[in-house]
Image 1: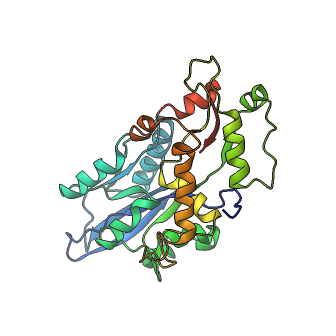
Image 2: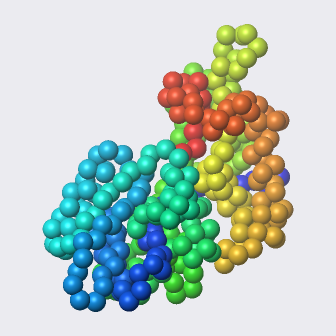
Length: 296
C-alpha cells in the first residue's frame, strides 16, 4: 500500500441557517446579525407587530447566557421584536427534524456540515446571499474552503460559525511507559502509525485481555474522512452531487480497508461493542492512560 501521511488537513464545520418560511404573504424578510446570533425579522407593510424569533443551537450554559444577553440587546434596539435563544445539547438533529416536521421550526438554527445538504435539497433553508451586503457580512473574512461548503453557485444558505481542525493527540506517558518514541512533527505514514499503535497496545497484567489500546476507532464522519483526503481520495464529486467514482474509488476503498484493519487485523482499537455505542469511554481511556492516541 502506498504510504500516506496521517495529517488531517481539512475540518468539520458548523453554520447558522435561517428556516425558509413561505407562510407570510406580503411580508419582506430582512436578515439581522448580532455577533454570532442571527435572526430573521418578518415585518408587514405598515405597523410593526410583536414578533418572536427562536434561535436554536447546542451551546452550553455559559454560551447560552452570553448569546441571550446579545439577543436581549437586539430586542431593545428593535422594538416589537423578541429573540429567544434555545439550546439542545443531546439529540439535536432529531429534535430539529421533529420541530420541522411538526410545523414549529426555529427561525434560526445551528447545523453541522454533514446535515446541511438534505435541508438545502428540500428547500428548507433561506438563501442568505441577497441579505449579506445589507447586514455587512464580509465573505472575504471567512476561509473560502469553509464558506464553499454552504454555497450552491451564487446562493449562500448558511453562515459558517466555526470550523474544527482534526488532529491526533497522543498521551506521552503511555508512549514513555511502552518505551516508544514520541511521534515526529513530520513524516508519519499509515504504516508507521499502525506500527506505533501496535507497540503501545498491551496486555499489562497478563490476563489475556488488552488493557491499553492504541487508539479509538474513528467512527464519526468528521473523524475518518480526513484519512480519505490524506490518501488523495474523496467521498463526493467536487460539486457534491455524485458519490459514484469517488466513494468507491480505489483510494477511498483502500482507506476503508486500512481503517477496518485497525480492528479486524491489528486489534489496536476497542472491541466492536464500543463502536455500536459511539464509544463514550474513548476520552476517559485516553486521559487515564488506557489509550495511547485520540482522533479529535
